[in-house]
Amino acid sequence: MAHMLDMAYRIHFKFLPISNKSTNDGHININIAGYALCVINTQGLIENCMVYVGENPVNHFINNIIKLHKFFSNKVKEECAKLINSSEEKTIFNQSKVCTYC
Image 1: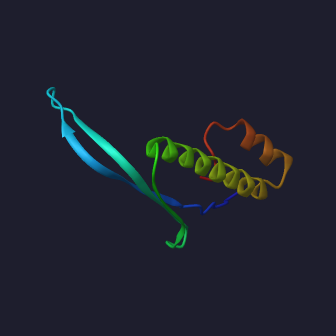
Image 2: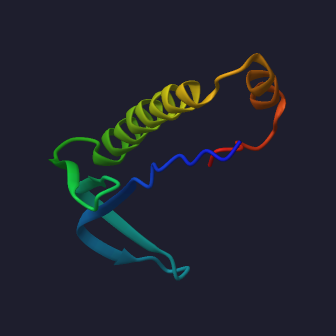
């Protein structure tokens, strides 16, 4: 059983700072104006790119990351379901703690 699951997507992001202020205790407070986020597919091409500048950019970013996580989780589940042919393979897959395909 030698299956290969080629799903090497990459997510690149960058926060867009407005200003940086040093505090008395040596920390730096960064005010964020927005962010840029790109999803690179398995062929190295940009599949999805978004730029957000507005209210609550960090919350907006986290919500988009959660949506991407759900999307890719479902995509992996769909692809793995295609690879499982027999009931024995399904049992092994369901009982394993580490994905045998990744």
